[in-house]
Length: 582
Image (cartoon, rainbow, N blue to C red; front, side, top):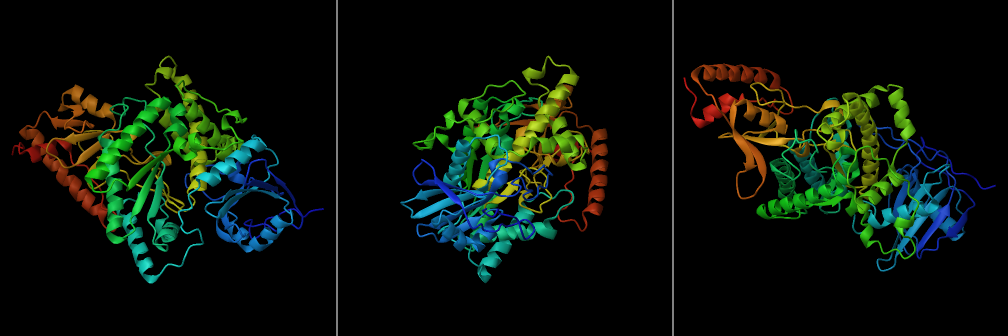
């Protein structure tokens, strides 16, 4: 009897079996080896947002991805069992030669011109919703699309003294310039060290630092939140800020950096009621906006874009034996009526078949009222109830039915979010992973602020002493695609809030202005000015601002970032316009 693979060292490795059975696939240069593994649905990693992280999909059975040369020498390896593969690589090579694998599946793809072979180990599944043909296709897809961000392909080099100085400067720059500090922040405890290691992966090679950010999906379908379907001043502000961060890295590190926006629009578009072609239009216009910003700032290659469709790049898949459209890929549910495109839908199905977590695990923790999961689920439910409030599909529904729909969509959103995160991990194993969610910054993901807190205030309302918007239930840090930008005439401070807030303020007559493109760029924002600036009001606002400044000064001491107070808008605009009466 062949020995089965078993976990050891706390579940982080496996013993090498003595016998195997090897079979070659029909596809040229792609081979498969079958082994047995105990419990492929092991818990892998941690998630700050406390997503259930178990499953039988290929992601959860993934053990390691590697590159070797044609002679069998291991060049590079990454993944949850990478250390074990390195430790036993010689034995694994012998087993390949002797047809002696048992317990895992190994898929390899040979690139003759490059003189390398890439491979991926996955555990065999006891039960699986996908066919062997799909597994073979998905593993090949990962091997052809993965970006190890290392050249030449070899294990990372040690970081020199100069490399360490540069690394520390980049880490400090991220900490002070971009990082979002939420509740229960773990940056100083563990996150900083993890982030430093990720930066060292690039600086030790003298390579451009690469980061990835799943974000910029599309505008919300709720017109109470946004100006319309197209990128506007909010996206412009966010992109300018990201460009500024990369520029700052260039000043301290000659190789520079690049930030990849991994757009998740097609991951969720059918959930949030946005047509797939609208997502495509938004993406094209966003890329053009980014190009203009880059040219204006002297470098158009600081920020790049990839969508779900781009990641899979099925149109350029030249496989002679696998027609992905003929594969038996499980369908996905659609709870909101939307127009979908064939390409986007196919990519969503591939994503979920290859990377989704266990639905039953999420459902059990919701039913069992797990505090973290229940808070996340309820947060998503409230968020989707609000987001779909103006959607044509919900207009004939009672409030009760809308809540039930939002709960179904929230569940699917959590599943999709985790699946996409898993895919990004497989395809960008060494990239620095950023997020627009309020993580505790322990790693591997780090929350960022898309709006510069020094010049932009995300507010609940346009009234004196309005509260700053905070990330609720660990959901989105304020983003351009759920808000609109308000510019107060004469003020250098910009305000980010719901479009309805600005429209209601105009309708009430307390301010005058309009929504429009106020220069040749055609980029939309609200331009407002207070309509009543009398002496009594002036005294009132002057007293209010003095009290606010004193209160903030008392709370700012000892904090990493000074408190960002909100100037009472009427007083601020009046003072800057010189129309304040005393």
